[in-house]
Length: 377
Image (cartoon, rainbow, N blue to C red; front, side, top):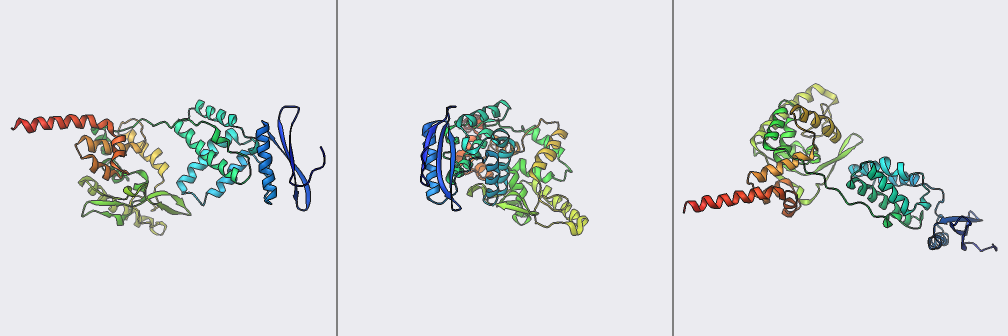
């Protein structure tokens, strides 16, 4: 090959069929040469254009040996300060549990769409849901968007891959009899009031974790949902705004919830006296024995799982209690708009879409009501 000036380059094909984009550039006052590999001539030319532009702009050339795993680790470090703790945890889980084990050793500049598609197929073979695979795809796509902008790679190969559709998990709810059994089993439990509010008012787990005493008015039998717990940083609870503007709401409490909260407050004051100086006062309604915020995973996998066992009920997701509250409200004839406001849905169409299976029974009840009305005529 003839000697070339700095920032010039060439594209050629090797004997093994791979295409090479070679570029010369100046670095630290010295003339250097870097080669990049591609599967097609078009891709090689694109990589050459990207590399030459970086050299012309005085930017570092894409590192040929940077692996997908190393890049994702570096990328996550930068995202830590930009994401809410719960969102960052989900991103980190997708990278640590799924993306790095499957794709981590591949050179970032050589990552191909077929490799990504094959990784998704292996995820599915392992039993991962379509929702989880789509979440992993979303994380990889965001990361590769940044890799492309930072000149680490010529293109975002995730854009060329079809991710599986989200799978909607089957809705789990308790029947009225099962809900009674659950709350009977919760009597005397340190989180009895927690479960009563979840079943009768439909608060989300994060909303219950973030609930403060200043937002509870027992005399007027109501509480105000103002935030959701995102996690704990440096020992301090990280509270975030509610999911939507409608999620900020006032919820009226049934008498059984008020009674349970009064008992809970007395128990918490006793715990505080016993803990003494080690009590951490965040003014939260539901805490550990030392005043710390409840850990969501502990609630789901320990406290709630054990409660279901004591009640003789099958395992279910904690979110099933929110679904239970909604279906019980509507099955009892509560107006759908009222139920929607109580649940904090963005609009009534959300309530109707999620709980449309309850409507046929409600319509039958409406027909019976018309019969009763005109029977008096």
